[in-house]
Image (cartoon, rainbow, N blue to C red; front, side, top):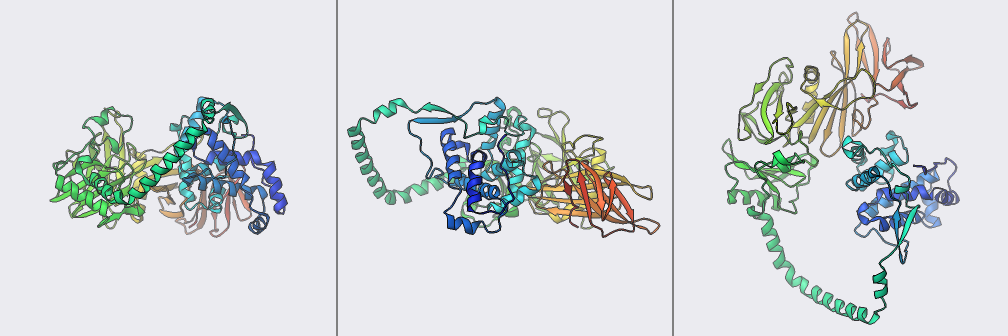
Length: 605
């Protein structure tokens, strides 16, 4: 887009802020427009965007206090505009004190189909995610500054917003990578059309309107008077409907073969007790009352507002088990207790299996209806063949947990039915949640940008996970959705041995991420970062260092960068390329220069 805020760096005072508002008015209004919910409609969203910007200046005395320490008038305004737009997006009445336009309707100019697709994609994201996306795509704010900006605007979970915003760049979003047409997203360049002319003529019937208003007030008073008497009797039937097993959603047995949404909504109800009303009522009552309910990794435990979907009800190892799904959470009821875990945005891979029970014999899974076979692999032995996992109506035989010393670690390769995908397999492992963690692998392509993670079923992928899987021990019960091994650099060490730099990124269902870099085969720790986008598709620039001792006793400082690193600086020395091995140095400051001119530092040790 043409309008981008000009971030001046002069001494900031009220006069400078007022001037910046006038100079950057169009860009500020566009930011507010992108953050506000499209559900407002185009006319009201345009007016709301102008209202947000016009209220960005407090009175002069408050403005002087709030400007203390500010270096940029435009930056101050941008934070206030986005903060107010996010608040308005969450408000039930986001139209307070709008500019008013009588007799006309306002519409942005029409655009191409891609622009409509982008607007529809923005509508599915949270206001915080739209704010993060607008900062990166509309304002060209560097990604490493976005989290700081969001925190300054009062966003409590900026990293989750950044991760959600990154999904707008997914290939599934019709190839949309940003606002394609200035006019489509410019609330200052609009078309005008008349409002409802017939309605305006009807205003002349003042007498009829007055009578209607009087009657409406009388009816309203009557409803308010009777609300207290009717509230208690109405609440009971509503709760009964929620607890009634007959209201549970049940998917047809073959629905998964004829749907474009292959996830938990396509699971049929299975198990020998799906018609046991007493058992189902116990599970629903436990969830509704909250007694004995626990949430994995901070998952909200509140009862669903609508009847959930029944996935399973039966006896597993002598214990009655009920599995429910409310559209964003899984709930497993067993032995009088209920466990709830997030599964929002689950897909064909992350809804491939669910943990049904844990016992001394091991873990039993319920596999998705589209899983044709399940094979158990020891991830610590990549060359060992897998063993077919027996199952009965989707319920697997018990799988032993990882050994205490990590000498063995089970993974399950789920192979899909040809009705879904021909010869497609995914690798998962149990990390203590209700749904196992999806494991992927990203090798270093010979040239060009890094690709997308692929299924960790190849020989190279299994070898990679054999080296790193023990690091997942610290992530038990953390709600980890997926983990990826990215081999971002390969290096020949001074002793002529080949080394691999692997960044293992683990993503939780709540959007938080953990990145850990290790150097193999030495197994050296080379850095770690939490609540970050590093090593994800949203941030593929990484630098890591490690102190390595050669067999002859010489200590080397090793450093490696990802593909966009063109030189590395160690202390005052600069080395061309993205690999370094310097003898006798282990504590120098290290930085890397990227091909786009920016600089990055190593992950923290």
